[in-house]
Amino acid sequence: MKAVVLSSGGLDSTTCLAIAIEKLGNANVSAVSIFYGQRHERELSCAKKIADYYGVAHYEFDAAQIFKRSDSALMNTSNKNLAHSTYAEQIEKNSRVETYVPFRNGLMISVAASFADSIYDDDIELYIGVHQDDAAVNAYPDCRADFIEKIGDAVNIGTYGKIKLVAPFLGKTKADVVKIGTDLNVPYELTWSCYERGDKPCGHCATCLDRAKAFRLNGIDDPAINLKGRR
Image 1 (tube, rainbow, N blue to C red):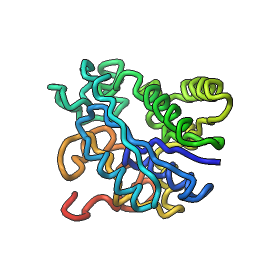
Image 2: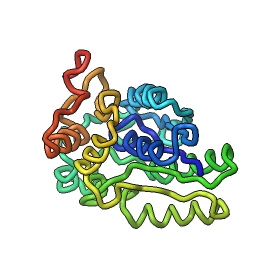
Image 3: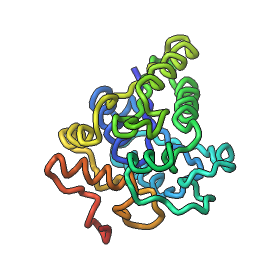
Image 4: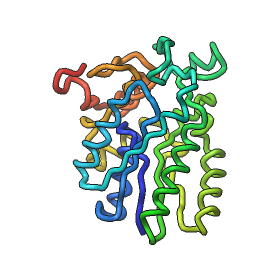
């Protein structure tokens, strides 16, 4: 059995990577990161550092051309100001979050599945770190359990049953993810979640707010804060 982990350099995907390594060993795990034109491309350098930390192969692909016409505030070509509010507050105001990128998870899962099927002859588990906080209030519909179930079926059928999509945090909150990762000694100090540009988390965007809450509910400090000048 081999594993390929979609790795953004953030908290959730890094915890997925730790789970896969704990199960299969780092020699049987690869990490895949995708540049899609995101404004916070710092996360990609973090993904590389995390792969180096764990000693796993790391591959990066460029899908920016696909999304260059998207008006998502998450894109580096967007002129929109990023909302400093929770996902629920954004949904209440606009019916969708401004950082939704069209069918992003569908594309990333497909890219990773095609690549995984190309490099491994063994059966493969394809990990993605979606969780309940991202699916709540339909913030990101491509994080919902029904979406993951159906695209997982498609991946499995389309690869002769070779690839199984694994989403270990479905139905779990980000606080649950932090608890799991803390037990696995995940190096959260290496991760990056903030959607803003810069060299330290803004602390106000939706993903910063969700991350801060997750650590607070576990009664621990976020190790990525107050580290090497970050705050």
